[in-house]
Amino acid sequence: MNRSEFIFATAIILFIAFALGWFASWLIHRLTKVSQADMGELEQMAQALHEAEETRDQALIYIENREAELNNQLNQSEAELRAAMDGLRDARHEAEELRRYIEHNKSNG
Image 1 (cartoon, rainbow, N blue to C red):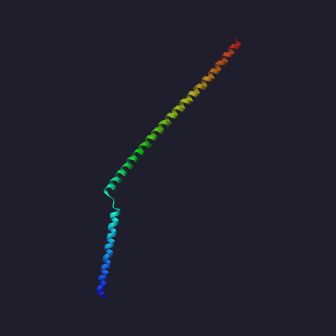
Image 2: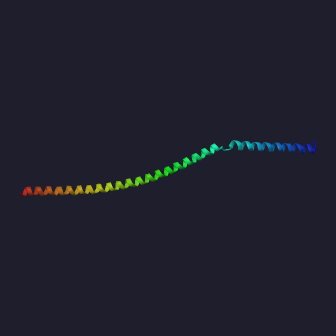
């Protein structure tokens, strides 16, 4: 094999390697390419996720407000209960004093 044949064979081998590399690159790009339908679906999913996050945030705010309202009502109810219990205790004490007074007047009268 003389020098020209060697150069020609080397050029053909390099051209074939280049063609195979280009074809492999094109094939990989073709197989991994995202279609417009897939992009539309991804955008719909992103929008749905965004709406779900907004709904979750609104629900958390509602729950926090409702919890604060219920805690306020509970505190008011507990205060009313304490006031009612204090009133009942005072009424029992007063009733006991009246019984003693009546019994004392019966025994003296």
